[in-house]
Length: 203
Image (cartoon, rainbow, N blue to C red; front, side, top):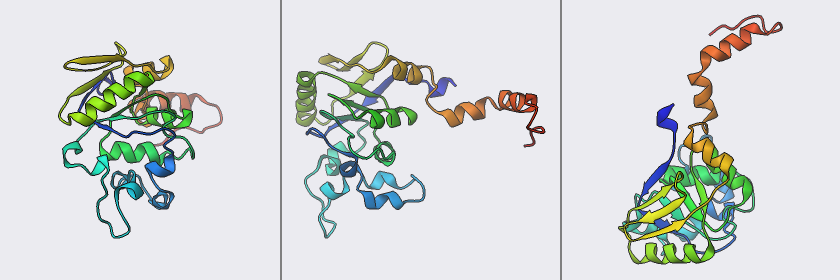
């Protein structure tokens, strides 16, 4: 289970400025018909990234120097609106591994945790500082460290926070419930076989 433990995330960052960015902006509703989540990485902020003729608009997710970014810097109440899990799925499949913001909609933050995406908060003034720095320099390597509660780069550091339960879930590698079940199938089988009404377990 060691490989599931998440303590630090390092990489380039991308900044999306604005409060109350809802899940319909993150991934428009028409893309929810996808049978699996596999292709959702194509669609984050789709209507803000492309015009009706599929020409690129000036959006950070379209900028060449932001491709490969692993951290996303946002502002207040990010992920509000519909509780659709497709929103963090789309961001994760685009390449985002951690999100730093002033605040998050509660269900969005919880959905992030189930995908192994830390959604950590920082003060409004700190977010303005790191967003400005991120926008000015695309090649900065940032690190979110859940253990120390810091977002840092070579010449800057700010405090970040998240619920203790969420932090422990990530750091102890307990966020992927399916993987936990598969890693503990012997215990699952033993419990199932011990129940008087199951009739035994067959693989």
